Length: 593
Ligand SMILES: *[C@@H]1O[C@H](CO)[C@@H](O)[C@H](O)[C@H]1NC(C)=O
Ligand SMILES: *[C@@H]1O[C@H](CO)[C@@H](O)[C@H](O)[C@H]1NC(C)=O
Ligand SMILES: *[C@@H]1O[C@H](CO)[C@@H](O)[C@H](O)[C@H]1NC(C)=O
Ligand SMILES: *[C@@H]1O[C@H](CO)[C@@H](O)[C@H](O)[C@H]1NC(C)=O
Ligand SMILES: *[C@@H]1O[C@H](CO)[C@@H](O)[C@H](O)[C@H]1NC(C)=O
Ligand SMILES: *[C@@H]1O[C@H](CO)[C@@H](O)[C@H](O)[C@H]1NC(C)=O
Ligand SMILES: *[C@@H]1O[C@H](CO)[C@@H](O)[C@H](O)[C@H]1NC(C)=O
Image 1 (tube, rainbow, N blue to C red):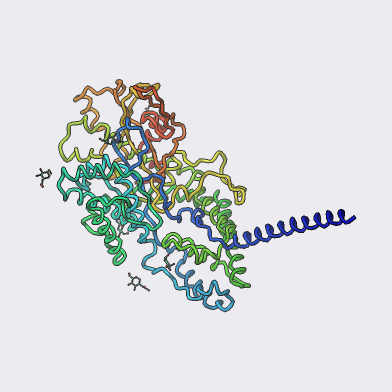
Image 2 (cartoon, helix red, strand yellow; image 1 turned 135 degrees about the horizontal axis):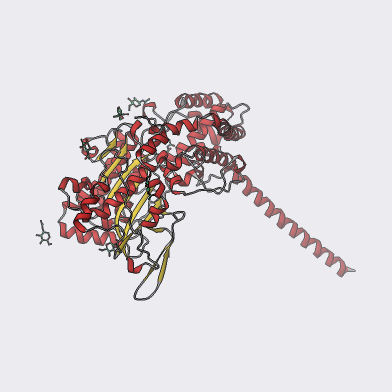
């Protein structure tokens, strides 16, 4: 009897223990849940589309080319979006922010203590600064330039002067400033290198560039090239780079000086800049966006905008104990959150008012809008980048042929294309994405893809954050290393890329080459060329390109490269685009000059 009670007691006790255990677990998990809604997601900016910060931790890791030494780097070409900018001030931006300020002030009595700081909110933007490059944008460019100096040291070491580099920019202040900040970083390095004794420095540079392989852009935005290295003039270089930042902070026209501008070829008239501002110079782009058949898409965009604004408003009502919040306040709070992150990396102020669902809604609004305006839905985008693409390929051809041509000195400089840098806009990056077929979904993005069902590839945050960049790397390799190498149609050359600005037509000189060298387009070469494309410093697989397989003749070891494409293969993929004439392009674009 007693035994039985004891046993029952034991069972009850166990039950109690189990129950309290579950209770604790439950309580703990609900605490977690509650905290979660206040938890500030460090990756909030993955929802911010074209207003995202450039990924801080770049995977490029400086000098790490991640390629077999049989590939010899010949050329790099950059297509870069400007760095982080201020809001553009469109759609009465300033009025909205001023309204937000008075709204927060008038309602501050109901705010919980945690949010009292909002009542002191001041418009952080000076109207005269809208659209300009932010100091963060200068840092974006300096850091990108420094990583390029390391990664491409085989080429950058050989540059004697900035005039050896081809640099292009659109006629927009923030873009010219981006170009200037980038090349100023190059210049500071080149000058320091050449100031010291040439042979001595060469040794140091080789050591410096080759030994320390990993360079990352750390959280503090450190400007030191390599924290582990205290080599020679790094301190001085960093000091000069900081000076650039300070000077720009004091005077936003700092980079608009002749010293740097003389190296930059600015496409002055944007209405004719088909290379870097196709969205401005091709009238069809805007005709498409505003066309009659666009009513449904434009209504959807409006609907998605309202959706994110309303979810932000719900967040604000709850967190600030408010009953009525006008749309304009919801919209402005999202915008301030986005720019606090972009400009200042601040995530615990306005962004702490906004929950994950609102962020997801905003992210989808960005993606849907970009997809339908700058992306695949707008079919003209697939060839809007045609002039730019032809110039890139033409510059590749020049590089390949430059040693084969006997030219006068000024003409020769035109063929000096080891490094080509182009600075432009998100509207330059997106068409190039669609031309190459990257981030392409099998099915069009529709309203049905809205979160939480968001399994699509076209992520504007990944594609075109601030300082988004394409690198086109050209390598030479001996054909004996390439498994299954086919000499047929090895190199095809591209005709004049629309004769814009001062671009040389490679084919104009082809006859000269043929005479000189008995040039044969299809002869079997002992070396050939391959191309690798990087988007935001990560190599991308080119759709339709056959991966290249390399064999080590000594060990018979094979290596396959999915992101390296034979140049001939690459050109074949886009042969229709490369074969488009200027007249065809103008006709398609509704250009009538
Ligand atoms: C860079 O130059 C070094 C030294 O000449 C060479 O060994 C290496 O293969 C080159 N790398 C590339 C990618 O061209
Ligand atoms: C805005 O910037 C301009 C030019 O830099 C300056 O003159 C003006 O005082 C600034 N306004 C405010 C409110 O800071
Ligand atoms: C540079 O260094 C080399 C070897 O250290 C020396 O022979 C040469 O005279 C130096 N040149 C100058 C200009 O200092
Ligand atoms: C270039 O842009 C500036 C500033 O926006 C403008 O004043 C100038 O007229 C532009 N140049 C041309 C040739 O359009
Ligand atoms: C910018 O960031 C710094 C450091 O994180 C912070 O102290 C400052 O308040 C921020 N400024 C704004 C306007 O958010
Ligand atoms: C481009 O061409 C114009 C006129 O054709 C000329 O004045 C200018 O110097 C050229 N620029 C370069 C960088 O060659
Ligand atoms: C390019 O177009 C021309 C005329 O439109 C045509 O004759 C030629 O065969 C085309 N070339 C290629 C490689 O498609």
